[in-house]
Image (cartoon, rainbow, N blue to C red):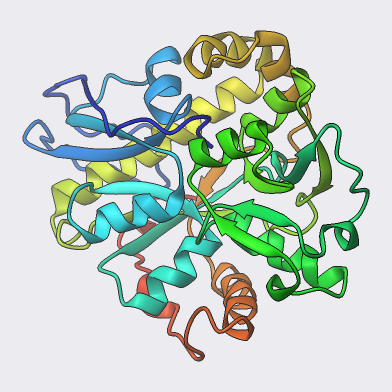
Length: 330
């Protein structure tokens, strides 16, 4: 997750003419057909301190195609950008997925990224007297619309016997939410990412309730369906996803290096980042999506349907594509 909102920026890496990587650790097909990908350009979404930082730092940005990174701070904005043909590849949780399906957006999910559910919580100012969700009745609670924060806020309220009608819900972007919490304009904030350990470290906020046992840890990688029929695009997109998985494997084995890489980018002390990484409850790992992933997303959709935020009986299956399955392992 990104820390602060930033105007959309682009950065180009590695214009190569190498053949598509066909090593055994990159795909499970018995042979890889050499494909010239030098004419392919992937417009990729990245959160701050993630893809656009981790791939170069792990020596995996020697792409045999062009990559243009754009920075986002929420998965729903990434999905919207793909729908608008502004980018070609990006990731999000189950929550943007159900809104994608409900709106009929022009997006296809090609892979699942298993990942941690830590760094997802409702925080309150350190001086707050709130000790449970029932204490938030009638209070101003910020959240990031159509994201995990939106979902787990509803679930936490339900667990406490409350609904969104029992609080004053305020949808805010990442930087606006941070400013509002620190200025005293919010009584609580449902948020995610490195901003949580930062708030804890500087003493300005504490966690009221964590979402680590609410979220599934299923994240999805979506692509621009207008590009998907192109075999060269398929090969480049698959290669990119598998490079990202390889980067996460390397960094999971050396979290001190990971913290050192990320700290100056997200402007959070290295020791805070390292503690945060050590607390992750599962590693990032890309794989093929499965029917159970879709069923898990249906469970999420049911929550938003009951809130009358999306129409019932949405078709999640039509969002998924198996076009990259020959390249991906499970």
